[in-house]
Image (cartoon, rainbow, N blue to C red; front, side, top):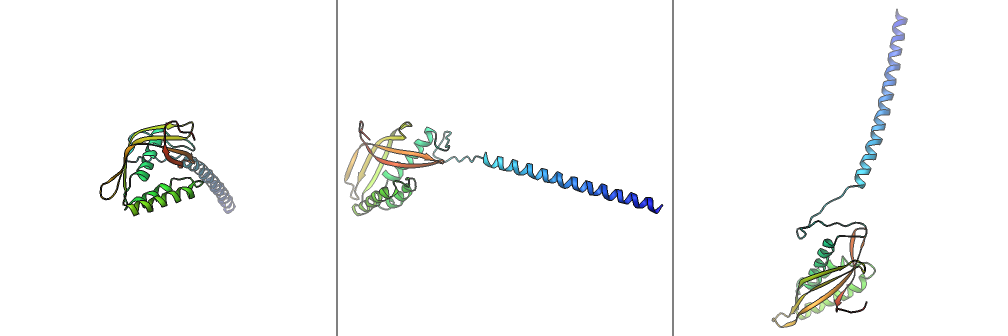
Length: 190
């Protein structure tokens, strides 16, 4: 009798060990599947950010963006570079320089730091009212038209006229970068 009991207990241990091996293998397979699903979901994840100033659907991909996004960015660039007073000019120009491409950054840093110094010395304020934005995707440019007013602290107008500006841009890895921002005259060559 004792020998029969011994064989039954041995068989139970063998079956138990097999069950545990099966459970471990099954859990390893589940862990691998879970890891693969997690990685694929992470890669396809999209974060949707809706700034308060944009009321339409916009998209940005590796090297492309919707017209609405480009128009919002050119409005932002105009806000930073053309609407200022002596107290905020330098800070706004620094924010603009964050959008400038590294290849032209030193040139634009010098231009805008010198401009900030002249603004502070002359107590000049400026306001630019955008009236039209034209996106030219083929050339990677945006032409913005509007009304520019500049005046000194004692309310003397320096400029009070319609002006156009041309912004050349590239979108690299989903980041909007400015390559050129200058006054534009219709029919002007590159």
